[in-house]
Length: 390
Ligand SMILES: Cc1ncc(COP(=O)(O)O)c(C=O)c1O
Image (cartoon, rainbow, N blue to C red; front, top):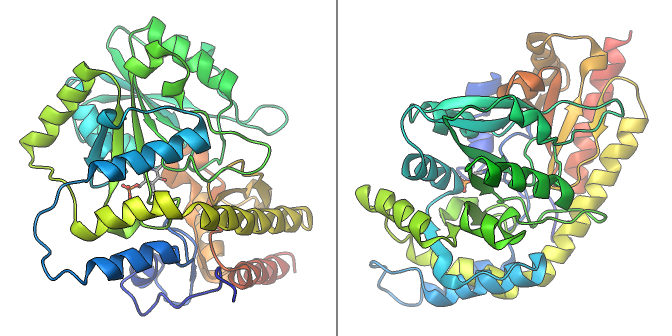
């Protein structure tokens, strides 16, 4: 049995499918936008949820310590980072944690560094909370690669710059920041007293040849000045459970964060999500290995397709299941590129420009799908490209 086969989601309430008509004007588009997987959540998670329902009471429950311990053990074995379970707090979502960290650990009017293009809530959690975005533009070097040079940050900051929002690995460009880049970034933040909020939700989805380094693991000083956002959502395709965690080693920062969560009665999450979270970390290891092989196969197929034509270049993803497609050789503006993707290729992809102006001319394509579905997407693109060159 192919455990990564296509599954009908159009009949479930999946956002990616339900919003097609509204966003793209048609249900005919293949939805490759929202970052969840069209791949079944691991069996060990589905089983434990069914088992929990044998108990007929679904009242308030707390996040069990054993669930935090399971996450600590996973992170130690996968990322060589030793976390004390006491540093972990429950959160309903990583985006909620981002917003909460901004409110708890910076002041109205502060400046916050955001590396653009990036997952859009990175901007809105800053502006919606009346802080200012300091935009660090990620651009390609001569060889077409994105890199992080902390020296460029020096000229952007002012005494009002108090926080940096890091996306590691980075959505949408697919970079897995290497240790030297992160060391330099960490040293820069320590030198300027800048708190780091590091969204590491994609950290378990890294391809061979690359290694995720949690920035907080680099030194005791960075551990004390970093808030790390973690979760099962991407790794095990469990985003609909509404469960993630926040890791804060510093007691001072942790208490500030908790004070903010108490003000809004943040809670401890749902009964079914607790058991699912713990089972995923304890029992999902082999499934995760197979998932990485499947995603890696899809990534290779995309790169092979990229080489087969001259109009769209797939930037080699180092991590995440999101491919960043450079469509600039098509010579279309963003409005026409959208029209091409939706009406000619019939693909519901994310427009690069929605991640920041640096994303103009790019689109993001979610390749966490069955191989047949990927072939269908590539066929659609080939047909559309063939018409374009007539
Ligand atoms: C970098 C990043 N952070 C956070 C999220 C969303 O996480 P959550 O659903 O836990 O809010 C996503 C989803 O695409 C993401 O790519």
